Amino acid sequence: MAATRREGDAVVSAARDPFLEPSIAGSILQSDMLVSSVQVPTLPARGRRKMSWPETVAGKIEEGQYKVRRMELQKADLDREIEVLEKVVRGMETEMQYELDLAAHCSDLEMMHRARQLARPRPPLSEAEERALRDIRDLAASAVAEYAASIGPEPAYDRPINPFSDTFRLPLPRAMVEAYASRQR
Image (cartoon, rainbow, N blue to C red):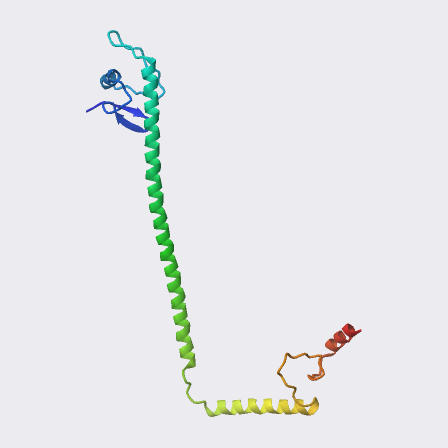
């Protein structure tokens, strides 16, 4: 089993890490120590070659470039995931709109069914119902005749009715007559 080093939450194999020098990678494999990206390099043991600062700086630059590339790849992955989620949301919106349209259509069908039921021919009226309808018609005819006798002939209803005009003579309540008279002054 290869020794590993931890960098944040990610566990990275020391043998595959491109940012460690082979001498440091060997010591990590032997001691299984934790290395952070901001750690100052330790002094080499006796007999090992010294690490030069330009190599360390170049390593840090490479590590930074590697992290930037990794972040760009993560951004591309996130963009793809966002696009997939947007497609899912559009699909859900379409499905919801379809369900709303279907509910409205069912409501319309139900209303049409009710209208057909109400429009079906009814059975003939009974004698009592016919007598009641005749009484209502007679009462309406007598009211119209009484109005014509007391007020005058019925006015033509070909334009909007104005209760204050001379052609439409109705006995107005006293309060309306007083209000109309006060406005005329």
